[in-house]
Each structure stands twice: as structure tokens, then as C-alpha cells.
Length: 81
Image 1 (cartoon, rainbow, N blue to C red):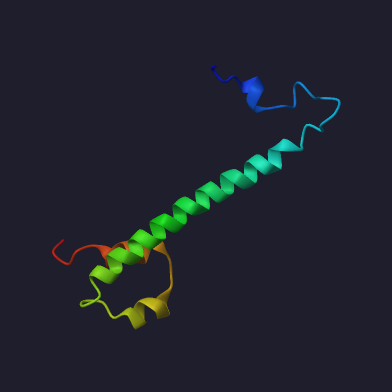
Image 2: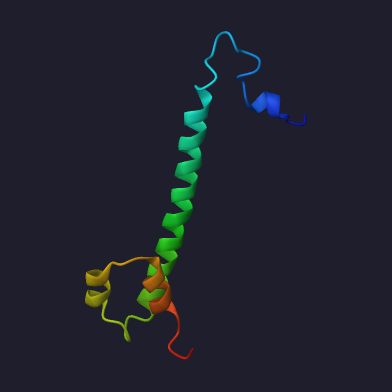
């Protein structure tokens, strides 16, 4: 059975019972959680990359800096670049 937009958003069918703004925050929270899960996964994979180069990088300095993903990307690049 193909899904239509009407089956996803119940505002149109139950206009008198459910306020229009009710389902939207739940959707936004789910979207936000999905985005943060992706960001956590990216951060964990970057952390794994950095640990691979831990013999060239002192982890204490990495913890002290804590500036952002840009420096993690720079640190996780191989030295041969």
C-alpha cells in the first residue's frame, strides 16, 4: 500500500480533535535526535581516526584544545599529505 502525505500527517483528518501544532514538535524532536546521532557517529569515527595516529599526536594536547571538528579533521589526516 503506497503511503501518501495525508496518512503521515493526521492534522487534515482530525482538524477538530487535534490542534494543528501538536504533531510537529514530535517530528522536530525526532529529526533533531536523528541528526545528533549522525553527528555522534561522525565524532566517534573521527576520534577513532585520531587514535590511529596517537604515536604522532599527544592525546593530552588534543584533550586540552577541544576546539572543534575542524581541528579533529586536520589532526586525523595522514602526515604524508
